[in-house]
Image (cartoon, rainbow, N blue to C red):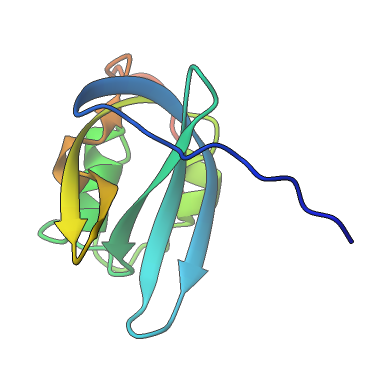
Length: 124
């Protein structure tokens, strides 16, 4: 199988608009929920959140910013609630060793169009 050589995915520091294309889950080294964010030019980046939903958790605060009411004892499916949503988010470039990478500031991910109280967002 031949694989094409792709250009480096460079995203400038600052505020961007895009959409959530995919939500995935991983358990190594910790349980995380990852959002695949796609910008208008089709470049991508990921934002990771610990897979815990409560009012004080990063994932819980994200769901609340997206207009999802959080209630103790309720189950939530981030994939159903977030995929396809238009968002804004801020990125920075960070260095690790001799390499640099784009980091999404997770607390900056928010709806591009603020949700209304009557949006009727259904929880799982």
